[in-house]
Amino acid sequence: MEFKPLTQFIDSITSWRIPWAEVLVMYRNETVFRYRQGYANLEDKMPIDDRKIFNLYSLTKIMTCTAALQLVEKGAMLLNDPISTYLPEYAEMTVRRILPDGGFALEKAERPITVRDLFTMTAGFSYDLGAPSIQEVVERTNGRVPTREFAAALAKEPLLFEPGTQWNYSLCHDILAALVEEVDGRRFGSYIRDEITGPLGMNDTGFDLTEEQRNRLAPQYEFNDGLDKPLRKDGNGYRLGTEFESGGAGLLSTVSDYVLFLNTLTHWGTSPDGVRILSPSSVNLMRTDHLTEPMRGDFNWEHLAGYGYGLGVRTHISKAASGSLSPLGEFGWSGAAGCLAIIDPESELTVMYAQHLLNNQEPFVHRRLKNIVYACL
View 1 (cartoon, rainbow, N blue to C red):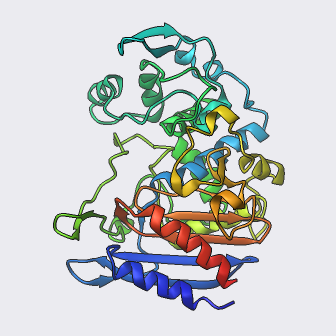
View 2: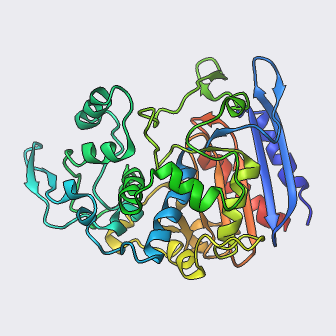
């Protein structure tokens, strides 16, 4: 294995517009390469170090889906169950229909939202955090927005389409977190700690930080094209309240911590220390392509050509379409500030890539990074 090209790539993007970047490669449960470059704090020229905490954003989704799959394994719920069995406010939903004259009408949904729809982004939700019902719950709870109350609020909004008929990236996994709470009885963050991060020894992953951890939180930036430089932009816009444990985008972590979770999925749900968080059957179900043919036109992000969508993850289904050097069945997801997870059971390969830059250049960085990693093996 020769990782010089990967070093050169990280050097090139951090000299371009990304303040810092780090990549960790695990092969057969061993760390075979780790490299970081750039400044965690541009103003003070503070180099990035291996203990910095950052926003995972949508990399949270993989853990949320893992938590929900654990409950499926226990028989606490089924993928084909209507979510109204557990979240009764979703029993009577409306769908926004576009009329021929360009207007719209609200009609009663013909299909129920299922648990599977939450996993697969096919429930009919949007990602509109400014929706009236969501703003109302922020005001009514004085900025707390407990996860379960967020779910109750979103049920008041009309759906964009009949559940199970189209794919749309949305707040599905935030509702999945509320479903875990309702079915299990614990707060979502407590469930995650008790059933996943705690057993795996992930002490720096969670929705809230201690004072010591806050001191290790890396500044966040957004690139300003007009000024041609990154500007400081801290905070997580998806964290709508102090008690909102966003299953879609709320976790914070470190590279060292989150790779433990990802590598456990690479090895079919069991860590090197023998901690089992999922069965091999569940990992396979997670990375199975769940898109129907009519949905493929919705899942049309250019940088995910050749990929299908499983239970909360992209999954590689066509090398010809993707042009990727990764094998079929490689899966994972990414986050708004630029993190990337590569989970590859067949190759026994895990990659955790991190940066902390909004407008993250994901289409440029991630495809190249992936190909370079596989070429280096």
